[in-house]
Length: 199
Image (cartoon, rainbow, N blue to C red; front, side, top):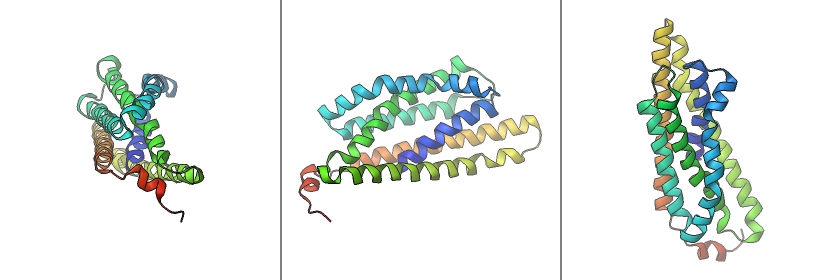
């Protein structure tokens, strides 16, 4: 839930930033964020194999940390004027790497310790948790960006909007950090889950 709050808020927020602050067209904004998903596609397979070898927790913590670093890059570096290569590209590549290390591995970790007869229910609970987190994250996104529409003047609006997006990226980074801390704290033995009686 916590990871999804930050992930979905960032996902929608980045498009809103590119179209609303940098005034990209929808097509250009889509192309601008494309390198991130390409990195996810390249990284997710090896990340899954690495998690199977060294454990889900280590890969997840690394992924959450890299994701948070990419969000921190956005918050610290991205400014009100378009500067794709200098400001945006590095952020989208770093966040893509973090998502590739965390998002698919998190889904696998959520159901890895379940016996076969509980796998479908466990997967459904995981998907539901993700959707609930996404809905909360988008609601928080709206709350963080809402004041920009009431600011006076184009320059003031751009400044307020940028502040709102910086708050958004900081919020998403905090969510990634909190998910990492929870992954570090989670030490439930797999055997205990497998041997638990059916409810």
